[in-house]
Amino acid sequence: MLHKVRVWDAPTRWFHWLLTVAVIALVVTANVGGSAMVWHFRLGYAVLTLLLFRLAWGGLGGHWSRFNVFLYSPQEVLKYLRGKTDQQHRVGHNPVGALSVYALLGILMLQGGSGLFSDDEISSTGPFAHLVSGDWVSTATWYHKDIGQYVLMALVALHVTAILFYWFKKKENLLKPMLTGDKLLDFPAQSSADRASDRIKALVVLGVSVGIMVGALKWLG
Image (cartoon, rainbow, N blue to C red; front, side):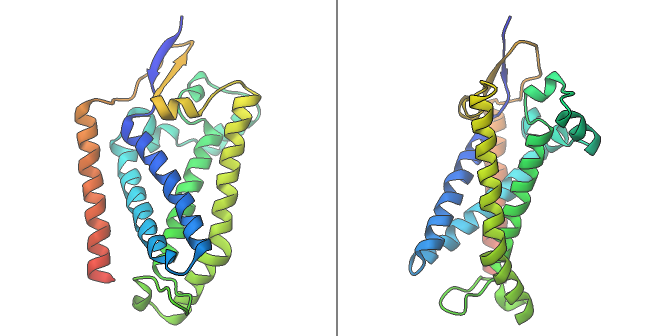
């Protein structure tokens, strides 16, 4: 008997795909340069806003979107790598997938944060560069241009590789649940709440995240 389980609530799915599009657009605008840098900054603000939303949604969202649900100990990660898996690992993020998510979120925050303090000394200056010393600006610029973007690209490539591995090797489509929200499992599992009230709550959280980002740019930029 198969059980249809709502794994990813709508706000989590929208976050995932909006972030994907924004990151791709950031790479494109960074390489085009020139007037495209205006959009590069706007997209950077959008990504930081989405990350603020995800941090909050990690405590307020559906069951499988909450950070405490896929916060695994080093011992659990090692057991998973040795093949000692739990059926619950097949529902949301498994221990290795969880590490990937945390790494991506962390590097995106570092990349976006460093961009706020960067200065290419040509035409593009981060809105917060004037708040710190020249040494801090130089370090932020160096990280943003020479380190962070390549680490991020490597993590994205690893993420895509894992999806392809599961698709072709394990015959498991990880993209479909992120599109529909549901998984068909051969065992019962808790479903994530995904009611209209939850989506309204997500809109409120997003509104607060936008307010924080706009306020920071207005008062500190």
